[in-house]
Image 1 (cartoon, rainbow over the protein chains, first blue to last red):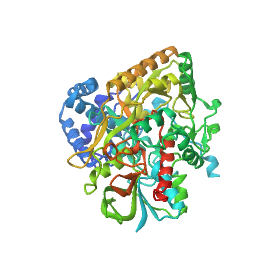
Image 2 (tube, rainbow over the protein chains, first blue to last red):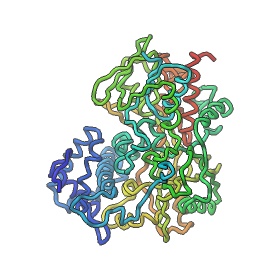
Image 3 (cartoon, rainbow over the protein chains, first blue to last red):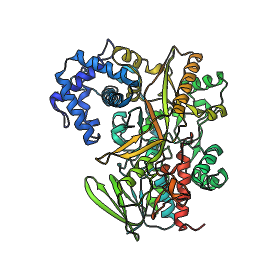
Image 4 (cartoon, rainbow over the protein chains, first blue to last red):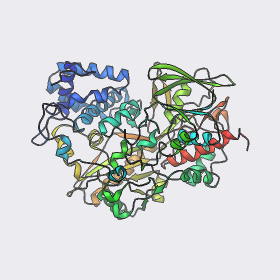
Amino acid sequence: MKTSTRHLTANQLRGLDKIGDAFIPGDQDLPSFSACSCARQADRVLAYLPDTDRRDLKMLLALFRLLPGSFLVLLVRLLERGQNIAGPLGALLRLARLGLKGLVMSLYYSGQTGEDYTGPSSLEVLGYEVSVYLDDLRS
Amino acid sequence: MYDFAIIGSGAAGGRLAYDLTAAGAACVLIEAGRAFEAATFPGHELDYSTQMFWGGGLEFSADARLGFLRGKCLGGSTVVNQALFDRFDDLVFEEWRQRSGVSFFTSATMAPDYDAAEKMAEVKTIPEKYHRRNAKIFIRALEERGLKWSQLRRAERDCAHEHGSDCLVCLGGCPRDSKQSALVTTIRQAKANGLKIETEFEIYSLADRRDKVIVQGFQRGEKVEITAAKAVLAAGALGSTGILLRSTTLKTSPRLGKGFCCHPQFMTYAVFPEPVDAHKGPFQAVKSDDPALRRAGYKFENVFAPPGATALLLPGFGKQHQDLMKKYRYLACMEVCVREDPVGEIRLSKQGRLVIHKPLTASDRRKIKEGLGLVQEMFQAAGAARVITCPQGFGLHLMGGCAIGVHPADSVVNPDFQLHDHPNIYVADSSIFPSAPGINPCLSVLALSHRAGRRILSGGRP
């Protein structure tokens, strides 16, 4: 199993797993964020972020590695409930929520999993399957 | 030296490239994003949202209340949008004429430009037999409320609906080349006319040397300059405005960056007892089309989103959020799209990054609240077990910032599409809009850029 990626150190990956589990703890049907090892796909997002955004995100993920999971659940609750706060604090909370939730949800609901995970992917559980008919163009 | 450097390759840039090369001009089309084609679109939501949109997927207003979607690839947003083709109505043109003093803003005067734009693409509606449950719920909800609806006019060639194509895929580019994007219409033909294309080239600024324009930027990390007799900005509201704001040697209007607007959209999901499978089949077949809604300043759209975007939009987290996501196949979706006031402003940070101030006015907030209330009632009347309003708004159709007008004091661009003090620099995209139309702008951008192309080629002669 990969313990680091091009853009994330092992500690930052662990931080991503921890904040991911705060958003998606898993249940009998869906695996937790960390269980499906989707964080290993993070470079597919991080490579295209503006440099300053990527740097800030990596600092946050390294910090999350050090914080207890229960604190991160409280943080996520604060981010979700802080949607209507006015002024710069509200803007910061909304931006943090969009950045973190966006990263976690896009990785998890990509259906991509790590080599060490053998269960059904999130998309299989959802029943999501899409395709465009191309057979007539191939012939 | 080129005759024209066209900056931005979306609806406007593609159309200008076609018109100018067809007249024999030597043109270069400059695009910040990558060149994809049907066989090389990233395909997966995780990859196309990061690789084909600015900001790695989303950009945000300064207060983060709105997220902005802006295509970054050859063909621009026309590759990743829904190819909806609506003409603006008299309500829009009358308001624009009053705001700008520009006399060609009438339905009759613009009609030949619309005709020319429509001629370049196949325009269809989705036959009713292919409507899926999300569309049927939408229609029923509107009808029970006594509201009118109509089929959306879509620029598409052959989506193979009879073979069950799932058009949600095409939010990341259409692998059948059915969507009539700039990539497969105007740019393809302009290439045949000799158009030169430069991609992954981010323009930083322009310098006007009176007999030529120097386009300065970075291509794959390397500093590059391109020289042309004239430059045409077609990079959209944020792109064109941002380049002009960074072009500190130009004399620009104090109105530059002001009047930014969009169509804020707020999605509402509803859980139904039976599967809806809104992700399957044709996507966005119908729209609300009611004069009362037009007067009220908002409309309803029949939309949906892939799992990653849906998960971001749905409020909450943890097991409650997971339970909702497990109902993905049972979700229907409707959004409120608001015709807002043009009070936004695009500025630059000290680091040269775009800062988008986009406050929602009291009038905007009233429309959003009224629209979301109606959606809630309509979904409940249609049999929804639960209705979920998403708090995060999205700004689609980014407009303004370089408003067109007769008077230099209250506009950036003159009626010949030139910067007031720099006749060699043209702007011909949605940044010239005087206000938000409340109607999908793609076809009108094509029509206006065709008009701009004609004005450029005529040298401003009537």
